Image 1 (tube, one colour):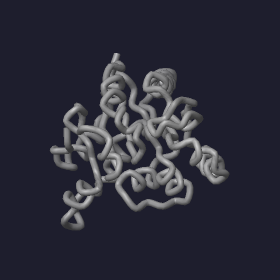
Image 2 (cartoon, rainbow, N blue to C red):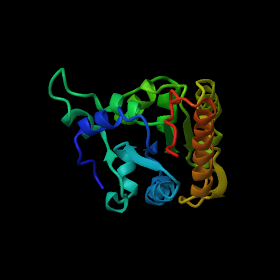
Image 3 (cartoon, rainbow, N blue to C red):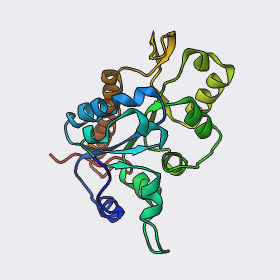
Length: 220
């Protein structure tokens, strides 16, 4: 569903001291965005997980928002919810809300933007403001010819230097008919990696018996 709740709800939620782990899903302009409804559905099956989505405008071409059962935030929400100085800024509120950010798929264009610090839409603004002590996972997805371009490896390396975690693309027959590397990782793989990072954070918080600075402890 579309983001119908006011941004102030995000601000209120960010003050919670316990509760579900919060996963922000980023989706960009790759045909693999059509898997967004399945990805969200499977993430919601994880125990004690809350999910929200931030989308680029081009990604909207590939999925039906009516099939996504959580709030979806886009560029229009960023500007419509801010009218005066005291209003919350959406990309900052999303950054505060989320414990983990997974961008699936990450297309070639947005990969290049993030690698070079460009933040010209809601999703890339969240990335630029991201707390690098929290997990940011990215799932590249593009045509094989684009994947094989030398700049792609440089840009992926740059993201890992920032501390972000790559969930590698796979070799498959792409929608365009080409066969080769560049397909987004399987949804089951993405969910498994997300679960691993959430469990790691939960175990860390339980071992210290204090609230984790990035991911809140689960209630027991």
